[in-house]
Image (tube, rainbow, N blue to C red; front, side):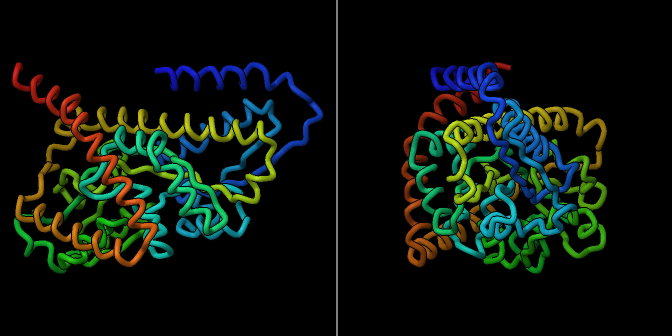
Length: 357
């Protein structure tokens, strides 16, 4: 509570005092490139909220222009555009850059890993932020948490998954480490920009896809083609990111650096709340409005194989990449400590409530 209270105090002071500062202050104008299209809520809302707060707290002297993917035409080019200084900022997800460096992967989420509160605690009070800057610093960038989706659903499938054999030859859009896990089990994995997902599913380019959760999925229309909706295992705490070009950041006055960090942190957490609200609303009406959707959980045989594949890949990458090893061991140690409290505070509470109904 003290941290949250201090955050609101900082926001209040900036909002009230800064606008009455030096009117002659030099204006700063930045550009931000998103991986997302202009209608992908709440991702877009998060970026707009951040930019609005920066402008308000700077008294109109720090302005960030936002370009969606339909403007810059390169959804998965955000990393390079920010690195090269074409854009001072980007909004994307760290696991999209695993082809550049596998150590980026755990900075979004990992299968069978932390929940959102556990991961936020690791970022801000464990080693998370320090390790994230270590990873991106090699590329002349900073990275900050950019909004969390919470636990994601396991995906939309045209056919029911009853055994490991049903995964063999399946064509699926699924990013991050989960894609590598499924590839070991015979799935043909691809990553497709958000704006092309429905068309790819409709045309049969893919047989299944994983997106986010009911709040964002239902309006995409995936259920019209792939009615089997599986619960998650792969992304329990998906954290988006604000990428920042370090040279541009270093040129900012200290006051503007503080404003930017406060705005990013506030907007990121607000996205978590907003997305939770969207999914709760969508889930509550899903059975009535969309009775053909069949909610499923993967069989134990499949989940156990996923977990074994995951462990093999983690151990392999730990041997091959020192920073990946450092990040994963930090997350694993923190999770071991935090999960006991999650079990007591959340799981047993929910279990006891269900038993009294």
